[in-house]
Amino acid sequence: MPPGRLPGEVFRARPTGRRPRGRPRTRWRDYLVGVDVMAALDMYVERGQWEKCLETASKQNFKILHKYVALYATHLIKEGEAQNALHLYVQHGAPSNPQNFNIYKRMFLDLLNLSGTDLPEGYRMWADLRNFLLLLCDNIAKSSEANSVSHEEFEQMLLIAHYCATRCAANGVDQLVSISTKLSVSLLRHTELVAADKAFYEAGLACRAIGWENMAFIFLNHFLDLSDGIDEGNLDSLDHSDFQETDIPFEVPVPSKLHVSEAQREEIRDWVLAASMDQRVQQVLPRDERDTYEASLLASNTGIRSLPCVITGYPVLRNQMNFKAPGKAANKDDWNKFLMATKTTHSPECQDVLRFVSQWCGGLPASGFSFH
Image (cartoon, rainbow, N blue to C red; front, side, top):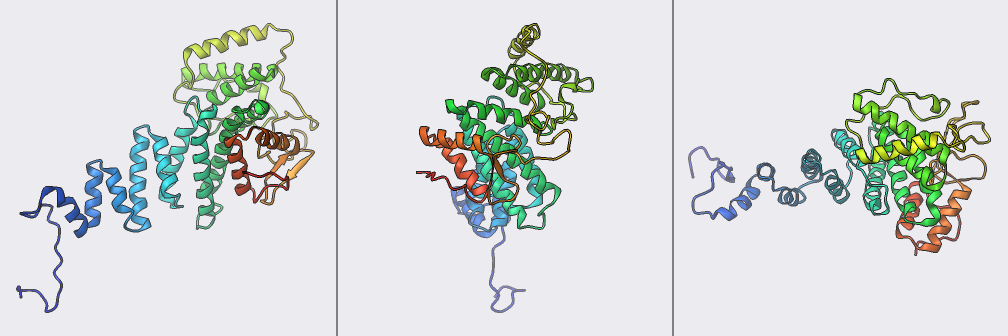
């Protein structure tokens, strides 16, 4: 028995960082895994062998796996690959570890501000993000972070991702163009997260396409003001008079860059100039029976806040449908329009939206609708 060894003591080899003599190089990593898993995982990270790292970590415990998932997600986000980071969390789950929250927020913001993601082909990304955020919020609700500021922030992100996913689905169905337009308008309420120039550009184009020219003029004119402010690096001189007594925020972050091309901006500049000389176009937002801007949740006279429709984001007023989950409701006309279009077109994306709403809102109102 070697000196210093206790009787019956089991000898465990310790990795020395050197490959044992006589052991083939190709088997050295497998040997290291058998001796010191954490050292092997760190070695895979250093070498950029992320798939091998996660494969090995997945055979350990949940905590170890998600340590390396977070490292890989951080690496992907830094490389401008937020969509691949999302795929990681879709595959491995959404732990409510507060140390991960900044990763989740950065991933969300990077995805939110990608250009050209409001088309039907963008649906899958938004649906994945929406589903991830629902799982995350459910996990947070069961943790010590329940009802925290971060929890509220992720609930807001979930709502935005749902609007973006539903807009993509509606953009693929001709009968739902008014619903996709309303969703673009509702997203203006969230420009503390959505890049303001992108939000006003998309809402303005959607309104113009459907013939809502007063709204199109106001939104696209504001987009031009925003784009000029972005060029100058501050938004202090913006005129918000069109949005007095609405819930569209005035204080928003200055985007680091313009989210549209110079050619797109000039096309909008030409259209706004022409519209300003058109007697039919009025610089006034439409109002409803509350004598309030029709898309505002907050009534300007009474201060009463309405629930947002789960299909359009517009305020739920008369003719409402309530769901089992608290705080979830829909305008009956828009709900029925979405339901009917889904039945007649068999749109897989619209069917998936209804599946999600059922999960999020505690079931669907009785309507005889089948997902099959």
